Length: 318
Image (cartoon, rainbow, N blue to C red):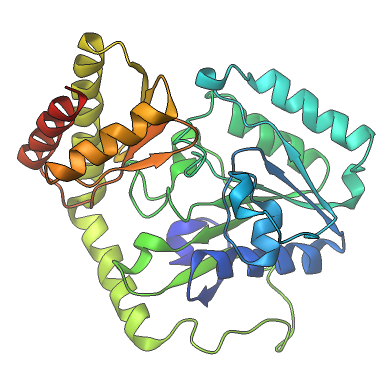
């Protein structure tokens, strides 16, 4: 696994049971490897609901309400997105402002980022964002942690979403699709960074034989054509959604990569209505962000099934 996630460099893997557990481990590792206390994450990001991961999460107030105080050494910057009117320049400027005011760069252990925001609305950043973020973190010796829990394992048409921008993070967090439904997560880092002694971190059931066996088979299946299928069928879904959007002005945006696709409605109420109407017609959809509807089908979906889904979405729109 480590050879596929961080090729060309010796790496180590720590297996967990879930994505939140992988994030918690990455947070501990970042502090241990750098000796620094602070973290930076992004508005709209979702990293889990355990205390460390929740401190990074800035997706919905309901996820944080009545759980304060969380970690005090976490700072947030806006996530760049054309649909939100935030540019890469503005995000980088905010990071620089954090460095010069409340989060001196020499105190920051890691920046945690979803290459494509999941719960935040399936937001795809501008093409220059992740390369510039990689450059900025490298300049200050800050670790870049890619939260690929939702976007990884082939969903976007690459094994990892960061591959779309030729960016290599220092730590990668995985879960969800890694074992096709069995409880497995992982964080992967360069060997020199994951050099902590035995006992520094642990997990009773992380990396259990059954889940790891499923993970190995999942990797084989991805390489046998499922990643390419995600790219191909994902393009079909986006093309179809754009055709539907041309006839339905209540759709304001269509975005995504591979089988991580969303369309945005004018209001949250309209998004919820579409999800309910599609459900009544036999199609499971989910909302994301403030008013987006996300489409995240299994990677085995074929063209005919995608076409049927598009027909149901169009009918649900009325």
